[in-house]
Length: 290
Image 1 (tube, rainbow, N blue to C red):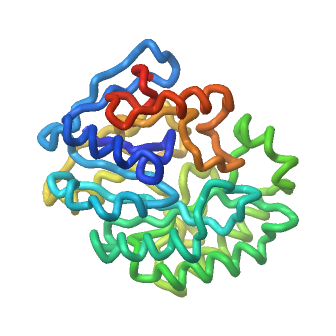
Image 2 (image 1 turned 30 degrees about the vertical axis):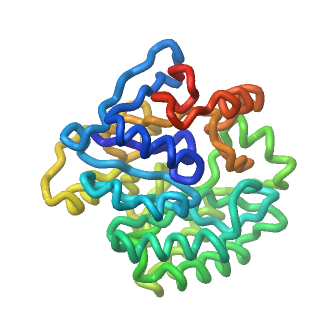
């Protein structure tokens, strides 16, 4: 069993105390996101877990406690994008907080267990193609040799994203735009020796040297643990998703990051309710079994 922590919320940034409490207790209660009454007890005992995949925009809160993960195979996917508070209001300074934290993480666990995510890529009057090329290059220079690879994706227009499109000043993005940007970003990544792949993109960028991502990747966990991991493809994801099957222990409408493009926060009322009920000692992230 692979644990995903989490596609639905930023556990390392905001719920690390809760997560390490759950490791100590050996289990977590995870609700079905489509039916909150269906709550599953998920073992977190080392003998039951093939590995843990962390998804975060800020790994800093986990850094002092990495030793508590010594019995597990794991890796971190860290999203580092160049957006300001108009798009990512809850993210600390990339330059002063996030990048130093990722570099320290790489020093602590090795670059093979650090994946840099530059996604989603969006266009606006402020965030132009040229802006992205400059920003990606600056980040690639800092992260060269410190991350296993970089995963990119272009913005998908989820319902919540569409509601915030005007506020973000989004511009339409054509296939020609995506091909142009993918080619330029791939060239920059190659310059710095960073392998590049694309997350769940229907377009084929292979001729540009961009692979298809498997964000929940048993190969990384196998390398970390020294043993092979049998896996199946994850059901219920987009057709172009290559992820292995995993159990997500997060919950929608719980992330304080507040990113305007986020698909996982879609009800301000439920977000407030979930945050008010949060208890780091609870078996459930939402405090009431989901």
